[in-house]
Length: 162
Ligand code: ZN
Image (cartoon, rainbow, N blue to C red; front, side, top):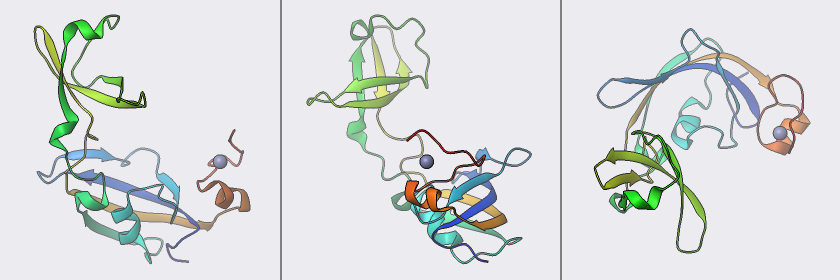
């Protein structure tokens, strides 16, 4: 069996940025399990592992376009501190919910804390980054009918509430 659409893939994965810093890794932890071909992982990674076999390892480079997209400078905004009443502990990296002009909620991350203002960033933390994945395929199985209908796996054999 090889990795392809509608298969449930279990793999170990280490993610590094361009500088070679480890951003995330499953090493020594639980493997990553997902339904291939349903955008459960970034598109570039999904494409790169297509056709791999159990026991195979690979190093994959994914451009930002095929991962978390470009970095948009207009996603960075400075907000007066007094607009943030009710938030006790502001820390860099904290996620806040903001609203666009239509009132749609979106998440921003605190980037900088100054005396009277804070700088927030609506970009994904990995936007604009080229991602370097090292993957090894641990197992591949058929998805259940229910998993295919939902477009994601049901890890512990149970069903989920949607
Ligand atoms: Zn489900």
